Image (cartoon, rainbow, N blue to C red; front, side, top):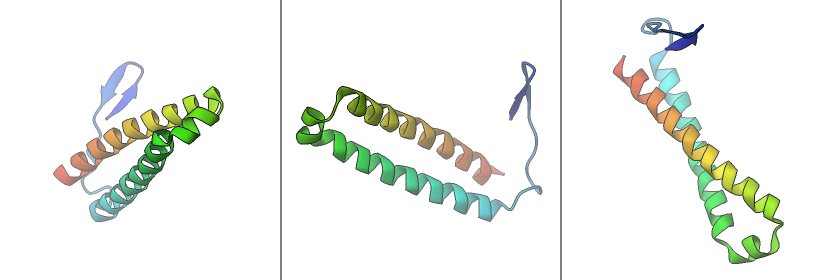
Length: 85
């Protein structure tokens, strides 16, 4: 679905994409993002890092974590839609 000038357009992708390749790409990206989340969560769980790092750096890591979680949600939605084709 695309948003164009305030209108939503639904473009059928069946037959236009390689479903298996797109599923593999999305699964790989989700796995990469989960790795990023694990590393960032571990960093933020380390009291030494949180106590010693400048607040701006800690805030940046927290924002990075939230962005990654949101991105995974979107990727999982895309994956579900591709699998449903």
